[in-house]
Image 1 (tube, rainbow, N blue to C red):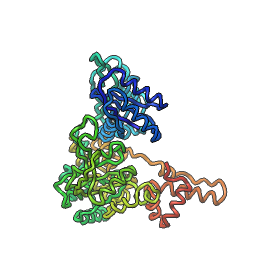
Image 2 (image 1 turned 90 degrees about the vertical axis):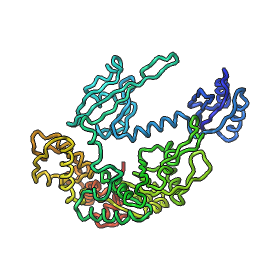
Image 3 (image 1 turned 60 degrees about the vertical axis):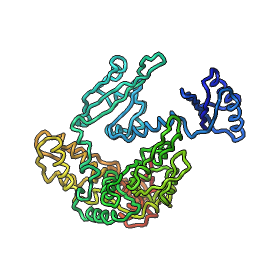
Length: 515
């Protein structure tokens, strides 16, 4: 429970507030004092009668002008906004405390160093920066500094910046440091392999397989229909690219295309980001703000990884899709906008509906039109085409001569399962090009990881035990190996030609697919 107390600047007023809380045995969790005459209190929920007594006592304090209940403290909002910004930054960014340990990090850090993000918190910063003396910099240097670094054969630039806090005497005190890592090469490498997103059309998609041509043909037809669209596909298949192309081919082209990353948007700030807030809804924000939905009026909003959307936001999005009306946070008046909705998910939404994780009514509101992007392993004829395209583009960006490529390389790439799909193919091509010591690209230049599922499928069969135990062990091994390529009970059931219920029961019995 959080309260905002508007009051005059009077000595002892804060102490009287704390005495009231103590007299009612209320445990204070947090307190903030604003120079504008506002005091914020955070404490556990209390019963209605106790809360009424508390409010009456606070209002009787000399100098108190008003007191009201609020949903969150200003510092909570600021912190969640900063975390949201941090999580969506494309460059790896992490913070270091004065003990030289990692305080915070975004997902880009975990991806670059192939580490679990949560496991990095509290670790010494030297696990990521082994060639940089972090403690010496914190104790002696404390100035903005740039250093070159090598990560898996790639050149990067690490920039460390001090974070200072000013005390009451206007003296600067070092509080922490922030590190940002960027590719040392030309920044164009960070851009997608397509033209500017606003100009993206279906003609820029690369693929010659029947499955891919069918997908693009279907996407062109659906772009002419102004209805909600659901795009399903594994990580790295290009769901956002396809959504942009559909938008640019629709009647909404020329209007805004707004992207909402549902996995990276904390619930505390998601509602204000989507729907905005009214003037005066929050302290020190008299002007209000338009949300993403309102900014996209006439255009399209793309909800990336919509399966990660919280239950609360699922309800609010459902209400908006029904009639196009919404309210800004802190405002009673309804606003109507005309917005196209495209959702994307790497998970089977219907499975999540059956599990009670995703709302069934929202699923059918989104799934008016449907596109499924086939994974790269299901269209092997596209691998060579995409690979040649990436080689030509990356060689130009790296200012190197296009290497000689043997047929062995193409066979090697076609035989790999590509769990990261097109995105993984491009990044693997880039790494391979940087490993060459002469103008010849060979299979040894590719460092493709073998998934645990594939490793399990290659193990010897254990023949210990009864026939029933041996058969169950063999069945479990087969399902484990295939689940990496068909990561849902529906896909796996279709692959094996059995019922969805039978496969779902076996996956549950063997504990396959559970974190």
